[in-house]
Image (cartoon, rainbow, N blue to C red):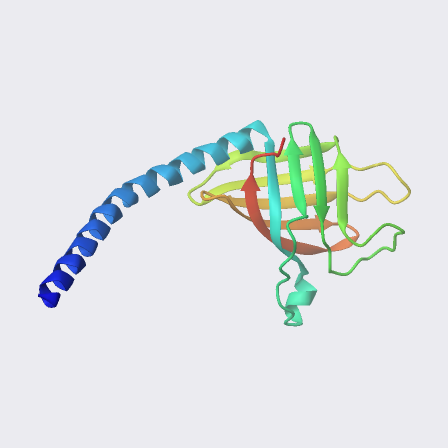
Length: 176
């Protein structure tokens, strides 16, 4: 009797799992497509935020075999139509000395987005270049951003006065 009850319970569990799996495959595909459409809309509207989860490493650090840094969620790149805000860690070498902190901090209205919304088979490629001519030591950055269809981001930051660094993160809707 125990064997029959156990077998019936097992059959019920297997049947419920298999029907749920078929349903979720379709749902997952629809969710992925909806997410890709939402991401594309954010990119085309130039209103998005990239929350950085790992990075700040330069090629020099990776050559030395140093591990990738997992960082707090406080670092970001925000694009809001005509404003660019960047707050990123930096652990590479600098070619010029400054009195400012060691991270990458940009708050400007003078920037250019190229390849905006250019979708390819893997996602989107976005290049953002700043045009800073203010201050004692103006520093321009170029951010090379690759966004997957799922919203994962691989980003490189380059400057004339710093070593190039790379970051990983997630594309998100701008917080209100």
